Image 1 (tube, helix red, strand yellow):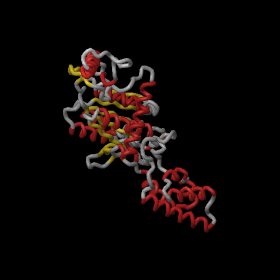
Image 2 (cartoon, rainbow, N blue to C red):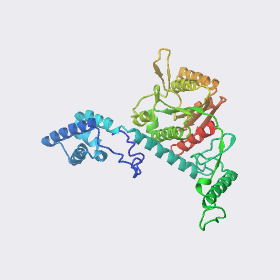
Image 3 (cartoon, rainbow, N blue to C red):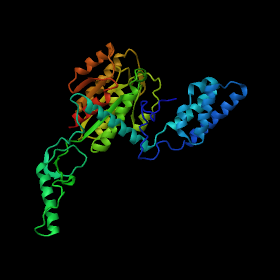
Image 4 (cartoon, rainbow, N blue to C red):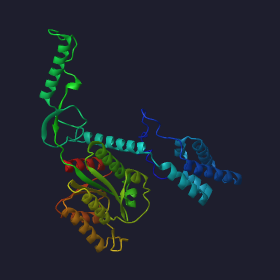
Length: 388
């Protein structure tokens, strides 16, 4: 079955939050109907003697799933069912997977939070890595504020003043001459004040994610998806003044939500249409003129597709000169509009190195080599550097 984000990367289920309702709700009705259809096919296979032990195990799991145990689906061996039941199993299996795979808004938020937590832990653990989040990056306003979740400088003078005012108010309430009672704290958490700063400048951010099948064959698609979820969560929760857009690109490019990216089936579609992705990014940046334009592109290959004048995708490998020229023109247009563009290259082959040389000849473009293990921290670092 299709890669399941409930299983994430094989460790503990990131949606199994002990302080929240169970992540696995009852199976969707469409999924139950597909499971029942498979059970009927298995019953027919039993009657002809075509069922084996693997199919019997799947039968038990599907029966528990239909009765409400959503986690039982993880025990279903789709390959064994297809071998035993033939083409008749393909439709119900696809419908079951499609219906069960959808995540609730709460589950999507939790996945984004987990992805961001993992990336920030990796950033802190790296040599010279960042300790915690970034500050606001602006000039001090002269005001002092309580802790508001941002990484602001401590204002020691304002903290001491708050502590003194609190103790003075307490003593006034107890009457003149009242001494400090034993065990009274000289400083409390609510006394602490931080230096308020002006916002560092909002940004319009585009994250372009390569959806080509080579990302799957190289084992990069999971890291790319987690990185996108983490960045989207970071912007939404800590920098809501920024405007972030996810763009996926294969033979064509399209604007995507986190749910779209998680649900993407990574089918074998040829083409790396970076030209179309940059075109959509420019449209997002123009919608938010006045914000700092930032483009982050994640890819493991050189561009092999572009849109023709008729709007249809043109694919060629090795890349046709027209594809390279169209991609260069779109990149130059983005740079001409003030965008700061960073490419994260996830492979190292001769043709990609040739494309890298093309990129590095352009002012305003930065190229970063990465692999699956460090992609997330590198993208988050670059976003924070560019916005502040």
